[in-house]
Length: 125
Image 1 (cartoon, rainbow, N blue to C red):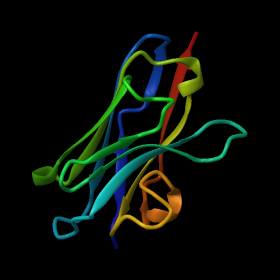
Image 2 (cartoon, rainbow, N blue to C red):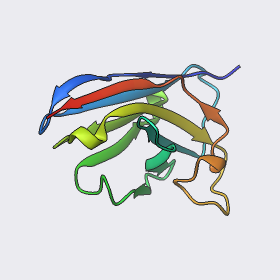
Image 3 (cartoon, rainbow, N blue to C red):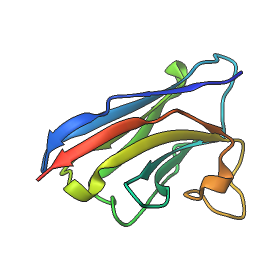
Image 4 (cartoon, one colour):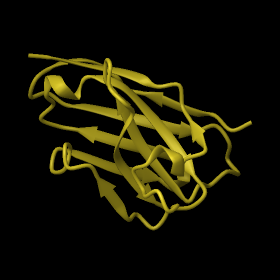
């Protein structure tokens, strides 16, 4: 069984920064792509950033220029650096891994087959 373990969530004031990490439990599993999704209260899960093994990235417009996704393949870990945080960035953040890009796109949850349990981010005004 492959597990994705997120960490780094917490509470921060608007304008602050957080760095999320997502580590794959298996040393032999190397996904084609990884992504970060978030879900706020009463909102649908939203894809915000993805990265392929070749370091190609995609971002949602809502986080473009503020968030940066990266990875350390040797550590089987993906990161999400979040700067200039806003209260509307609050929510549960999930890491996901996929075998390939699909017709649904890099930021669509249907592209991903393995999910973490999530880490909570709270941004206060």
